[in-house]
Every structure is written in C-alpha cells, then in structure tokens.
Length: 215
Ligand code: NAP
Image (cartoon, rainbow, N blue to C red; front, top):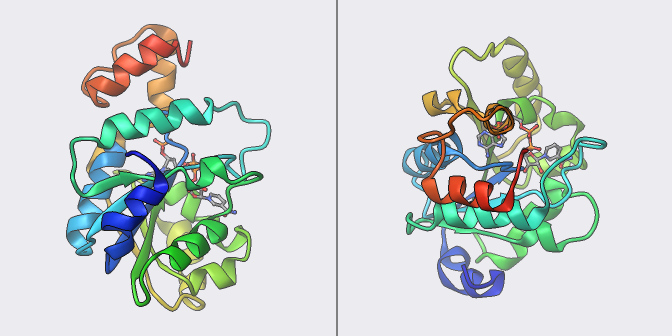
C-alpha cells in the first residue's frame, strides 16, 4: 500500500461495510489471514484493513518487534488479496494505540453510514470492558471475535454478554480452525530453530530470516 491517504481515497473510503483487523501481528500468520477472509465473506465486508498496533495498550514491559517490521510483514502477507489493505494509523499515532481512537479516525475518514466491524482475537476481546472508553467504543462499531479451536468460551460469553448490553452494533463470535496457529508459537519455533514453513506466507518467513527476528 502506498500510503494511508491514498488507500483511504480508494476502496477504504468508499466501503459501505468495512472490517478493521486489529492485532500486534508479531508475526502475522495464516490464522490471521483466514480470520480476516472468513469475516469478510460471512459479514459481507467490502474491504478488511489490517491495523498493526503501534504501542499495544496492555503490553507494558512485554517485548515486541519494532512497528516497522510488523507493518512490513503485514503488507507482505496481505499483498495477494485485493480485498485486504494495511493501515499505518496506529504506527503513526504517538502514545498507546487505543482502539477507540482508531475507530474514531476511521469513522471520520469513511463515508457517512459506513458500518464498521472491529475484528480481533478472543483473548483480547474478553477484556473489552476494561478498554479505554469501552462504553463509547461499543456504540461505535460491531465486533467480530475470533476463537481458536478448543477455546473455552465460558468467560468470554459472560463478558461479551455484559458488553452486548451496551453495544449498539452487535458482537459476534466466530471459531476459526486456522487459529490453531499462533504468533507466540511461531516466535518460539524460530528461537528453537524449528520449522515455520506453512504456518505463514513464505514472504513473511523470508522477512523474519532476513531481519533476524525472534532469535
Ligand atoms: P494479544 O494479546 O496479542 O492477542 C490476544 C489473542 O488474540 C492472541 O491469542 C492472538 O493470537 C489473538 N489475536 C490477536 N489479534 C487477532 C486478530 N486480529 N485475529 C485473530 N486473532 C487475533 O492482543 P493484541 O494483538 O495486543 O490486541 C488485539 C487488538 O485489540 C489490537 O488491535 C489492540 O490494539 C486491541 N486492544 C485495545 C485495547 C484498548 O483500546 N484499550 C486493549 C487491548 C487490546 P496471536 O498471538 O497469534 O496473534
């Protein structure tokens, strides 16, 4: 993607139903790509914009790869899907990457009436009521929450039920078998010298090797 402004002028700004795929993407893998594609088809989204977190708000003291590497890997991974875009919105905004700020920015840049769907993982979404300005956020967009196979949904459903009492656009849970793949596992595999082929796009694996990530 050339720049945020360029892509906003094109497909993103014109979308009527827009997916916003939030995550750290350290690294992005096929689980994320399948999640975005499943959400796109199931919820009739015109475009899914991947938004790598700049400074993840809840990861104080946790080591993450530089934003430019996570952004580059996301661009490489999504390049072959014409319905996928990548945004630097959180990379370029100083301070913690609060979702409410991101959704507000999309809201002002998209055409009036555009329906926004924030897509993310269950372990993040289960804490949604603790996110910055959660009540306001739940009234700004719908949520698509992706679970891994075998994920125990008891606590998730209880938390989402509380969130649904506030939400005006809906909160949907989707099980994604490909989310058996995890970034944590990929980082550990690289560190241990185990193969990561077929867990993520080859272009992303090449980037990881060249940049010396996760060693
Ligand atoms: P995380 O804790 O790194 O990930 C939580 C779990 O969800 C992990 O199992 C992760 O798997 C999975 N996951 C993350 N993003 C996913 C996606 N887009 N699709 C499918 N699975 C996904 O969470 P995070 O990445 O930092 O946060 C997720 C999103 O929530 C980000 O956009 C973040 O900014 C937002 N968030 C906002 C606030 C706030 O506004 N206060 C607070 C917390 C999170 P992998 O490790 O394999 O990715």
